[in-house]
Image 1: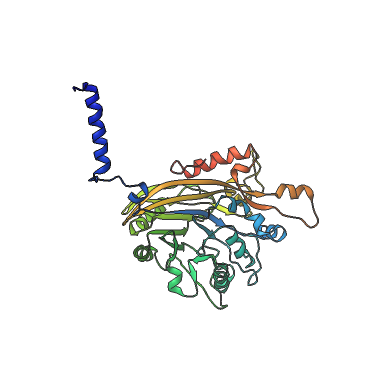
Image 2 (image 1 turned 120 degrees about the horizontal axis):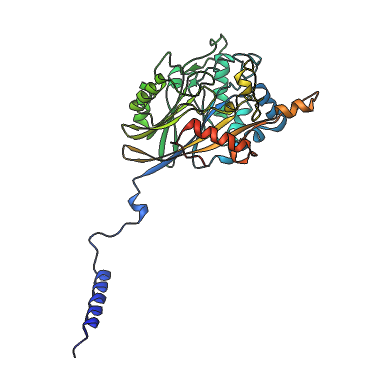
Length: 388
């Protein structure tokens, strides 16, 4: 019997399918998870300065740290490592906290538990206010942070540990954190025990970065630098940052100016690095008198009137690691805002005022403030960061 050509073609195709099912394949397809088994990933969420001013502490005393820091807790994820710069000793009994230029800062040690419950993991302690409660106050601060299961970097009673990295491991990825400062406002004082602060004047971070590179998959350098309310990084800062990237830093988190500055992606010997020149304030009493559209006399101090001091950003940096290569997979930002009820308190004229100063996701702020500040935050950090 002669078969029709179309029937022959169908039988031939069927035979090929059967053969493919029965015979072992020379190059079997691998599931995606198997192909990516050698790739590890980690997300680092970084934020700016925690300035626990007198009225911030009053707000926490009246309403609880969960209220003051609740907006941060809302946006942090459990699978990421969260960092912020603690620009306030968690001690307030060596010197009385006072306003001024510069102020003397201090907060109760109970704030450490509030910071931990807000979702933070690592706190940088090297900054210009580190000696506001003497070196002994910073030693007690480090103890309070560690008692709350937080990682403290940039200060320690052991000088070598102060300048060295602390390692945090997440999902098999080892992340090294370093914290350094360009300046310190006050001498260390004579009280004991005394914490050493990682001061760039005494030791450049490059050596510690290289040592951390040998121990970790990702290296994060927090650096407190620049001067108050400067909107752009200095060329010297750009040069220093690139030197530290060459030494092995994958993420540089700048703080100090109390306003947001540019975030940029740069090539590194391992792939690509991120430099955030300033992440501004995370929480403070600055900018308290700002009102949208209102002009203030030049005589009013910038710390009182600048909306930029109330702008915040949670910078979410996602790295993938394959061998000795580090790749930046995502660079995203969550816009934040510091709520401050200064004008409401002024209208109430309470004999014993109540305070409401707290972090809030900008997406929850009413218009037209939300649109005004979102545009300002995007301009400040630039196009490298995706901000919804």
